[in-house]
View 1 (tube, one colour):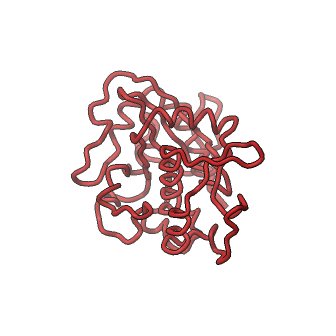
View 2 (cartoon, rainbow, N blue to C red):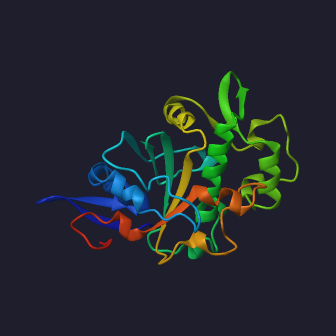
Length: 252
């Protein structure tokens, strides 16, 4: 069962935040709008990679997303995302593990529950969208993985979605895919403005940036080597989610 986090709303009211996603919603709606530049500047990029948020000043135009769903047969449910014009449109996906280090989050869990898997799914989604990997089924537009992605994450990535040896190329269920409709389309319309300015953040219990070492659970970005993609990944400690009245995240 997920944890419950009790957070202040007013002098006589509190929020009951269920799980990490609930805590993220509380933080994003009650604190983040007033401190977006400071928040973004606290993310650490791998050594040698410049932060795109380093020189952010003032209050840029931004949209905060809490509770995104990119499909159970698609690309998962990020804990949040921030679209910000700094000055060019930029998207930052957020994944949170409050009580685990990055390494611990990648042990003994299903692919979709590890930080490695979650970050890989968002990277796959963003690159496929940037490359316009679309198809149509029954007059509905989908974002769909390519054979290169499918083969890599089936054979090397260990994605259980592709566990079957036999794949029907013409059956939509053989591919990770996402309908580009309704709220998803609203989100991807913004993503389209970002070009290659899309980043992926992990917020964890680590004391140091887990993307700065050579751990074997770094995100695997298809056939690209880590030095080619490392500038897209960043990290922050869980203290980044503390409200101004708190020194650290506290549990109920």
